[in-house]
Length: 423
Image 1 (cartoon, rainbow, N blue to C red):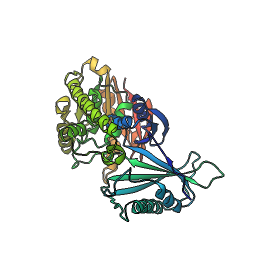
Image 2: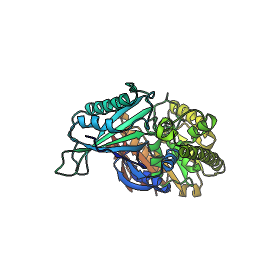
Image 3: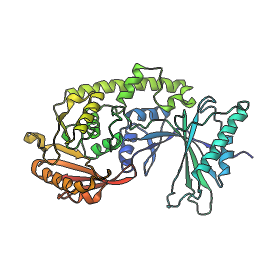
């Protein structure tokens, strides 16, 4: 007997760092999408495919965007196999393309966990169903699995049914449109470690209320992620600016996974819409850099470590933003900016101090945080200051009263963005 599979149309899910969901929702709504719902770690939305593609280019906050493809309910793991065999996979990807399955099991709205013990067994049943469907349709031939660089990355999301009389769980099959995460803008030198992903740095900057009209300073700039994301916001430069430039220069190459998906590449309308979007965002990037050049508002960065200065110089050059930053090598506990009263009235300081993730540094950090707080009191009157850390005990060493604390997650680390009004 045929299994009932719901084929989903124009439904998407954009993931993001936990705590930034409302910022992502704002981005989704700005593109006139109908938001289906905000959940921990992302936003569900309904939109024409072209709008989802535009979010790929415009979102500062999204980590990945998934196309929701199918949904069904299962009672046992083996049900996955039979549902997968009912799905027509050839319109989604080709026999010659590779695929990979990732399983995510979530709690339902009542906090109940999935009863399935093995995500590997779930993935195996879905994979077998896909493979056997291709065998049936392609004279016994099947696509290969590639765990490293698959053409088609499939996310299987499993969540228990909230109906107390049902033992079934809801399975959603989502197609990763990205491949590499959207947070990887392309300007960072991978030889230098960075504690913040680009979209989290953008989120911190937006949560501060920064609009590009305020003096901006990061006194522990590291490799410069917060600084560069602030400049992108200041110039209204799309976060995809490097990829867009590369796409214009190399129109035959593919840069994101969806470009290899049959639902996209066999849709003439979507191909034309994508070509127009790329041209539009390429022009937005040019206009944004012109806006940066014409701005008189200052952006400052400093760090005490020479290797950090080398890293931010590399990244600023890679993003073509070196001329827009006043960069010095100084300690955050001593550095003072030479600003006019007007520049101080409208100024934001954001920094992400070390918080003990490296062995051997913990003993020095209480003094660092205390001295940073003392320098803020002494030299930064008029500023709004923001300290982002994953060590709440160290935050207490800053002897300043917080006006706000925002809970965020840096990966799996629960963190705080603390706001200080410096009078």
